[in-house]
Length: 633
Image 1 (tube, rainbow, N blue to C red):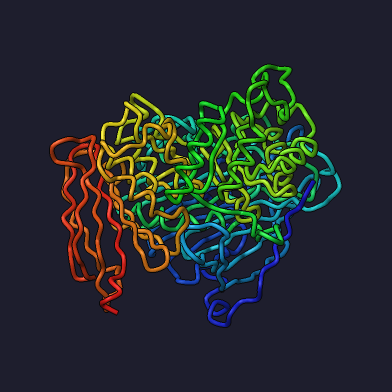
Image 2: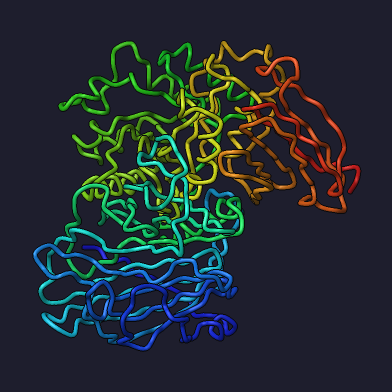
């Protein structure tokens, strides 16, 4: 069993001053007695505080219990911690504190692909080593980290007699809120969201966003899941959530560290989206020495799978600042059967190798769809080395299994193996990321989202405007905008999705073919042509879950601002984020007032003091490119 080592730099003196053992406010709940002095820590900025103690609770003695406050208000009240081990007593009670230790970090790191040029990485850490006072005296450690963006904790089972090999049947982690707040629930990673009380939630997907009074809270999972089972969240009483395994159990051997459980909190839901990097922070640093082959960009999905269509895509891409052509399912043999053909088999008439060569001759990368059944049935080294020899730049894993410990073990192995052969990766369908792309940045994007190709209730603007505030906290989302497809109701909305839903690979023509790319819908594609796929800065300017959102993202000196809305509204977009000493040329791409399917363009000069009144009809969008007026410098 792999035990992830954490290499943490020593703290700056100011952080060490903040990190201290503190007296904790009496934990709220059904505690009967305190059996150990409470411990705690604060975040570097002092907004988050964590308390820990051993309590007699729920009829059990000396249980591990934690609480979290934010801005001096109770966020998570008295909540039990622990693990249930198959054929052994629960590892959650009769504890004594054996030892404690602290550390801090005050730094930042640079992502290969990201929403910012650098992510802050500041935390204070408290490790509590516990030992059972009765029975077999098993040991368990709990590590808490308080970041400026939220709190994370994980379990560590050290090497010890009796736990050489064992099965974790359940993780008994609870999140008890002060009240039965409501949040945005879905039980399926590509499902429909609805707002419901905590007490009505069963097997909720993470990240789970809760409206907790005047704050917004997100409960998430972070770190490698290679040796674990993905987490879901279910009601455990009127105002409590408990972790469950999505499927099965965890086979383990000490020493073992579990993934992190994360509690983020913010004044607005947009702040949670901006701070998504906390999930990446809780992963190990980049493990790839040379990342020069990892390239973001805009991708055109080829479904016709013939040279004529593929070459047309390549020609269009090369002329319009797109970077990749993607060959989707159908080039290979039997791929969905229990006995699939080898994933290097090319069907007759599919000139795949010629298409790859033509793409490279014209400066285009090449992405290849491969169904998981073929990948799992055959040797990955053989498959990926062949793709590397062909000149394939990236692989899209299709219909990956996502529920169990075994599923995670294979998937993480495949992600790392792809890096050995310099293959970038896009993972579909229900897997949701946990920040592993920090360690392996060849992981470009992930589905785990009801993308723009979905119809009916899943495809409503309201459901997409829940996804914009929930799923995006987990990381890059392959939202697959559809521009020319007949299902589109507003092309201004489609343009905005590529800014609202961050992805280093933007599949911005999911169903389109290059012979449909004409100007009959207006100049909207000029927006995508100029848009990058990664950013130096990102700001959520406004938003309300399921209602509307506006995001501004900067690349170099240029800003791209996009809004989407459910109901008709006019947003007052204040440009105060711009450099106050410069003027900007604004290109505005909005809905044509005479036809919702058309995009109209207008230009004007603006400054940081200006307000743009962005008028949108229901289910529409608004898009702006802001470029520095060089004459104003």
